[in-house]
Length: 300
Image (tube, rainbow, N blue to C red):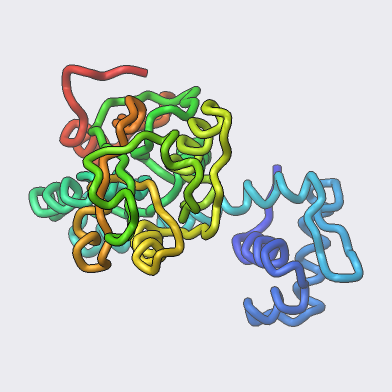
């Protein structure tokens, strides 16, 4: 049984993130000798080297990566305990950690969570905007209670509830040849330069998969991290973009871009609530799920 303290775990995480023992020690106000001793004690407890000493710095070993994930989980639980105790002192009676895709937030989740918070002021919602893959990992690691994802990714070990739908649309500059079209197919777009979201996002994966199925490949000119930046790039005529219609509508007029319907059956997507099947849910979590889910369409 490992008996390390939280300070040693935080130090180990810092070493892995900074790849430097000296900087990690400084970040925690520890003497270098004390930090080195703490690292050595953890390795002795584990019974295996956790980092490689390389010329350019430190790098986790395979055992080190396992230890890193464990340390992050323990530290997160410790931080959560501190926050929950503070909430109890302030009169807050529950906390729900929600990880959600950008698509879900712009479609309806932000408004739904705001309404829930007004109705239940004694429940705190911690919300993080994350890609679907990150959300599923957070549920697996027990650092999220509820995830809201775009349907399509495998959800083994999770229970899924239908939540909402969104529709993808094409953003083009108002002077673009397609700006006056009511709709367009993906096949008509394959010769265009694209402004795209990061590779890990559900939108990028879907569009790239459908383009390859047509025998083509997306001509990526710019990759960005947010819908707003994508629209700004389209407004500067750096390419076209495909994104949720709900994200595009409020930005279109301000940035001089046009919205064109993407005429594809897969352009209408399902958004799901997901929770860990084997996890005991708090009252606050159950209340949020029952508020958000469609009661007659549950599946897993």
